[in-house]
Length: 588
Image 1 (cartoon, one colour):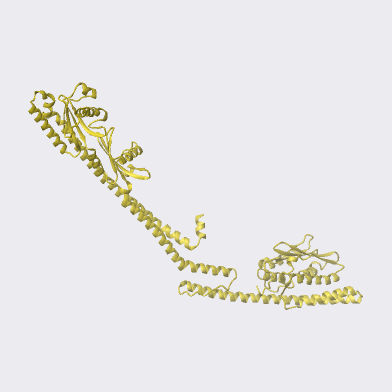
Image 2: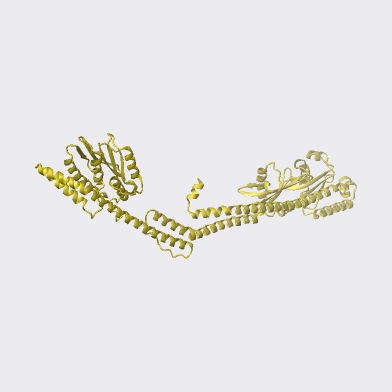
């Protein structure tokens, strides 16, 4: 079906389709190369981001591990052990000195790491708190220290969240629960409060284009927007392992994000980072836009180039095709001289010369056929007039001798009309009504001549066919042929019928006799001559009439012969009823 449509279409869409088909593989190859390059760059960017995040997370993990290890070394600190176990044995000076030394150590400890906000040591035996911060309510701070130490059993180790604040808490000796701490007070409780602001700054530094959050078993650090978006991302990811590849991208709210994750088994931490795809692949996205812009520009170029070829080639070809179709329809007056100097100019000039010669040949052939038709008409007139004239005068003589004045008057009247019609040479074509009236005059004379042997009958000519122009003397030769050959040997009961049949687009005149008919070989020979396009030698009678009708009406006109139902001879004359059929041939 597509092939048929392609074959029926003009050159312009074929050119556009051809150029498009040729250039599509190039576009496809460029798109594939662009996608491969995008995947490679995306992979390298993802690997770079993964390395960056891994490095930052490793630095955070090492820093937290260092803080935790320093906290564990507090067990072996002499000042803490003395203050926790033998504070009552110390003098006021010794106690004050050890407390000051412990405070200095805690201060150094806090200053050593930006992640530490405050360091506190609670000594239950003396109800003292040594802290780098400010103590406004000793009793409240003591309760808080115990609660923070107890929260580790709910929130996990090493980082514990309490009242939206992050702590590294250690009890010595270790106690299993808050009740255990109350019943058996430890030597000391050490709480290191981590700076949430420092952690958030570190997360912001890890993912400047996106967001990040640090997760424990029951807590998370990050700004609220990052946490809510990451919570939705985690829900969509489910149990899928995240590796920072395009497979770990998810769509949230109509936008795609690349997700990276790092885990620490020793610290029981997880870092989850997201980066918008636009931020990570923004330049690559612009390459795709430029690629499609290139495709659009190429299509426009194809259209312009095809249109240029259309102006240079298709338009003159279309004009040449129109001229050929006009010539095919018989219009030889449409050739216009083209002022072109290229190959099409040569084609147009040669075409014009060919059409001019063809028109000249057709005119010569047409004039020759008209002259042939006139010659044949004159030949018919010469054949008809002599013997019919002799017979008519003989009948008229007999009628006068027998004093049958009425019939003699009819014969003389019809005879005058008859010869007036066939000798009127100024018109080669007449209205069908005039031809029929002429035949009626002929039959009136023949009816008087063969009144005792042959009877002839006429049906009415339909009104719509009365004005059709036909060649003169196309009916009389057929009727005369019936008298001379079909009914010649009939002694009585001869019958001749002329019937006019209206078949819509043509008039069929049927001339039927009940004579002896025509032998099969003669009828076959006659039929062969009627079917032949050209007749050589002398052509008279039915063949003459047939040729003249063909010249006038083309293939739709002519005569047919066949054997009648009763064995007689039937001749059918076909006259088409076409528009402008009443226009004389010379004008047409």
